[in-house]
Picture 1 (cartoon, rainbow, N blue to C red):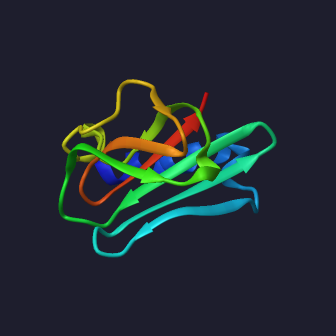
Picture 2: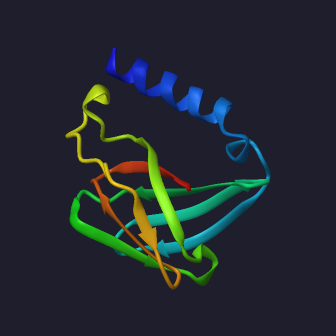
Picture 3: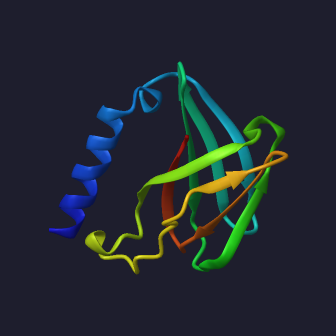
Amino acid sequence: AQLFRFYADLIRLRLARPSLRSGNLDVVYVHDANRVLAFRRWDGAEELLVFSSLSNTTFAAGYSIENSRLGDGQWREIFNSDRLEYGGDGFVNAETIASGGGVFTARLPANSVLVFQRQ
């Protein structure tokens, strides 16, 4: 049931966000040793940041990425694969996150995919 809910929510997110269906993709961060990847998706005024970790380590104090293409702004988490409803630990970013000078820092659960929307 948890896996079904995960897939249903992921499909619903993709259908609701044109930027996830557009061809616009910009890889903004790759760190092989930490097994972390981040990329931007956008369509028109909508911009998303997909932040993923294949690491067995949770970055509880936050994981920072830096790329000038991120710019300054506010980001809100709209999807987190570590939610309790999916069988995860519920390690989420409940507050809006500010990026400044191209630096973005979020709490990053182990083995997870997070999606943030620019506000």
